[in-house]
Amino acid sequence: MAVDTETQFHVLAVDDSLIDRKLIERLLRTSSYQVTTVDSGSKALEFLGLHVEQGTGPPSIPADDHPEIVVNLIITDYCMPGMTGYDLLKKIKESSSLKDIPVVVMSSENVPSRINRCLEEGAEEFFLKPVQLSDMKRLKPHLLKTKSKESQEPQQQQQPSTNKRKALDEGLPTDRTRPRYNSLSVV
Image (cartoon, rainbow, N blue to C red; front, side):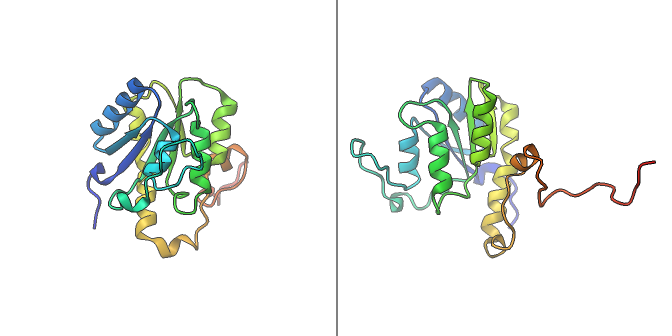
């Protein structure tokens, strides 16, 4: 079955700021994505069906309370009280059931070490706030990647997943790149 529109993609947006949450929700809906918003990393984990290991918070939502909802991408603010976006990213990537969900981190602060740390931990992108409609277009390749993983689950074990940006930043070869003109020589 061919995917004609993005309406089949569901994005979980996490931001403690109501204004930023409403902005990202509007941008995602304008781009025809289904959106769920939450105001904290712990609520995001609860929505995703992971139990939060904090005895003081509200009870976790069991995963079977909303089994029909599939999250194709998570976009999270970096600076949030309690659990930061980086902490949320780490928990998602450490989870066997959630690790393949692409995560995009956003922040109003342009701190290169923070950006690199998130990308090294497995974030697909790092957006600077205010997020714009043009940023939403950068989400589609990551969403399409998750759709292709879902449809080709048996082949996933044969192809190791690599973070292309991380490999390029570190000067490592990636499985997806090859010389453009390998038969030409420079004179």
